[in-house]
Length: 482
Image (tube, rainbow, N blue to C red):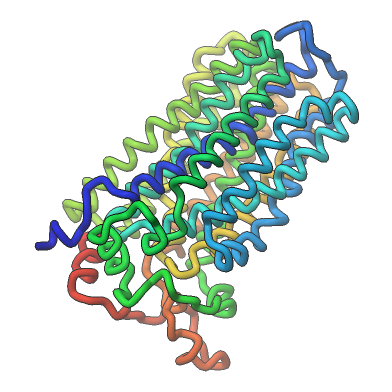
């Protein structure tokens, strides 16, 4: 009986996760390929000589790399309101379509206005892409029964690793081909446009609104969300005071900010480090830059398999599982980064190996801390993601500028040592805070009747309050199994 009530093994919820995976892939490819493109645009000798070369200084290149995040952080918070009001289908379509258009216009804008125009178009692209991850989280919360959350969430977010691989691996090859460096932007435009078409046809805000879902899967998703009368029909006010007085929320904010710092360093600065210190040309630079992200992509599924086995066999609680995986994915890379800083061009193989291990270990951060947002509050997951991602991405805005100040000589190993050591310290502290105060417990302020029953003047900290959701027997069993 329970098997029948669980819905199909592969259903529309899995297709939604696949669409989210592809959304992250195409948008990440467009976002990150600029780190390889900028090397080709400033050093034509390493790529196709038929296209313009720009004499941009290191500081100007840092402005270009960071400018995306100037716009990105601005729209995070509004994204939380927009996705609550209009749903993920409409809101997620807009930034991806905008990315397609802006990517296609980039070569013309750069030819007309130089690095200043490049910065401007990246800022605008960041403004649109700031809407993406609150939508992703809200969509996962609507479509992921608790027992499927690790699987669907980790798979969807592995699109970031896949997108990083494609951005790093393909960009150098495209730049060396007949399309030259402009081809990097044209390919990104085409893939984003194709995804938009798939999303219009196959995407749905939630199970009840999907034209493709069967009744058994729809009822299973609704039942597992704790309120069989209609989880998706609820409009619960955001309990701002409780959120901002919750120590688990702050722990989550800090650990994700640490990840934002590290991602910015590794994703945007790796090509410059390999070109400057390891003296690799643009083609091999791009291919080897992709190796760490290929390892991250593969390891994300290793972590997922471990999490599934650990939870199904009850080896540990969900909180312990997330903290254990997050510790490996933060403190392991912290040690590897220290080692990378001591290597030079005579140790290229070892440097690439350590960078690959670093990235592979860090793949667990999705299961380790991103999905904790949905665990803590499925009703407000989109808004929480907007806050966490918005504040966390202040650091990717600042780190390229900081690297531009520290690394005045791109071939200086000592200067890159400082950059990697700082990132290692951030990794260590961020996870330590998460270990002490983080939790996956469903927070009391996620409840529909929380604001009606709590006196704001006497309200205790949210994480100290006991909350027992009203569930039917099948949903309660599903929650315990998850």
